[in-house]
Amino acid sequence: IVYTLLIHMRHCARSIYERPHFLWAPKSYSVAQANGVEVIMEKWRAGAREPAHSHPGDDMTVVVEGSMAVQFFTKSDDGTLVKDGAPLVLKKGDAGHIAGGRIHDAAYLEDCKLVYVHDGRFGFVAEGAA
Image: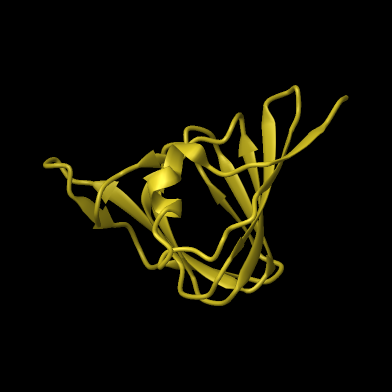
């Protein structure tokens, strides 16, 4: 199996990365396998937030350093996002699974280093304001 290591900036979410108050120069390193699994390592500064979004494939996040909160949402009949339960807080050593298509946001409570494992190529779908 040939692995390719490359710097991977989520170009499909470029508008998020262009807002310096959201992020701390996230560093993403991606390893993609022939079987369609993609692994990404990112770093986020405390206080950074990702707006509501979903991914086309399943996502597993492992927190290597720091802590983060993930809020899930559903869409009402008129398209408004509605919180679905309390935020899920993940701390160093925790792992969380997000099913493909599940709407969520992310808030970084401390400086974080995360490893994401995506089923298929990474994709980002903006889902509107909560």
